[in-house]
Length: 126
Image 1 (cartoon, rainbow, N blue to C red):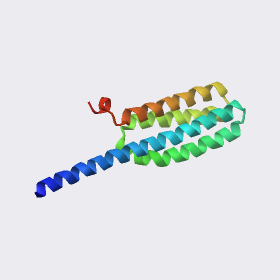
Image 2: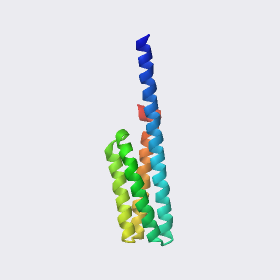
Image 3: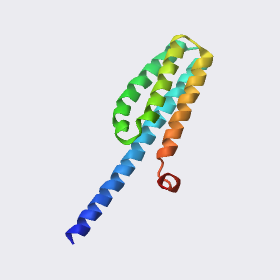
Image 4: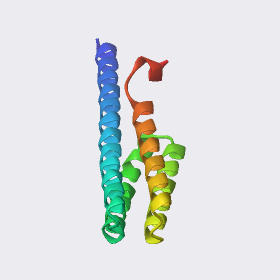
């Protein structure tokens, strides 16, 4: 009887960790995507100073979230997103509209790919 209770407890803990993992990833990636879309809109309106401020805010938020996400996720994916966000910031500082668009779209693509790869589905399990 004790072994059954212990097995059930470990199973519930595993399920809880999986759900927490998915929630954290979804929350972090959605927040970053929203910021990037706002940065693109500000860039399109030629408001580079406001876009740069949003990018600085995004980098601060991402730095906090990456510490938690690195527990659950392979670092290569996180490093790729972090690098893309740095390129967005650098292109905004140089007021390069085309490079800002490219790097923002690239970062959004990486964020969506991360969210999809961590989604709970049969494809990801097997």
